[in-house]
Image (cartoon, rainbow, N blue to C red):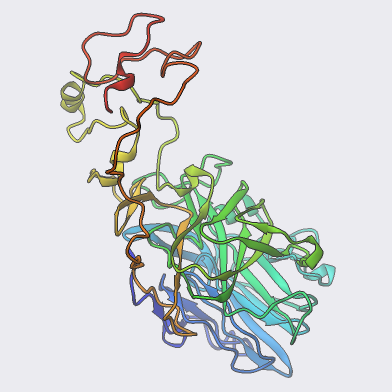
Length: 471
């Protein structure tokens, strides 16, 4: 689903939470966000100026100024995230959402963060990547007491360097991070910075993975590697907002990774430079053009490029399973397997069984298979030319010439100029066969399988009769 009216005004999207006002009289009013729409960038109402980021399908946490200090109020609490339309997951997060709201400050800001715990167990908040006093680092038992349920703690420090950072618990973190407790922190430069360029579009993404069995609503928190939900900001394609840019805008994309594996993040149609890492801005002499950058576990990366090629460009993790929807991982490979005679027998046990896989899985992109409750298709998303066969960590960069400077709405599908779309060849056929070392299916040790549409099975060691059957 790509909606043209995806953006909701932050002022109307947030609502005061039901905190006991008497008990929190000295605290900033906590605000929460239940909508999964992308909130409009939060222009700073006070303090030092900066260009705000856009958190796809997320929002930025408002603050108040108190005697020159920026005060924020995070509330750790159970939340429900709509990961895809109709697919709801019980998570733990902050201020109504997972990931929690993005925190934006300026280099040199004095920051005070109140953290109220509404979870059923204790927690802490680690400010991932920050230079700060040791006692503010948020490691329960090491640098501070745990925040018990119902209690509020205060963290206070100075934002000492610009860059892209994260926040997450360092208390029962296997469970709490598996349940979605995480957020982004952006420290903007104070004025011009020799290593940080002015950009016209500044996007922020947090990578998260969950293991949610179809039909269930709560992630399996003990999973280590075999996740089935791979998300940008806890949303999966096509439920993710697109990145939008006006042609020739300079675009920055910030990516943080709090999953259990690395993610090679790949952009089509443009080359970019990694302009920032966990350590801050990258020295110019250390930059080189890339189209893919690997974001390892616990790392942040900033990439920048000039969006000078109009169109709808794919932006995704290059691990192919990470661009799938909910899927099982223990499936046999059925390519070339003859299903004849089996379907009817299986349907006597499983009435909804559909034959698939003998020619690859592409057919699933157009199938209307019944699904268990509370899940979403493995291959989904439709474009102007048919099924995209993508889900998970996938979205699009939409570059348009006629876009407004501050317009971040989805402009719809790209209208290609005549003669610029790949097309079927209808000219003269190839006049000679390309030389091959071996005929298809006869490589030494290759499995001999029988493909659908042929009578009989191949004799051991004989060429596969299905190699040219047109499937």
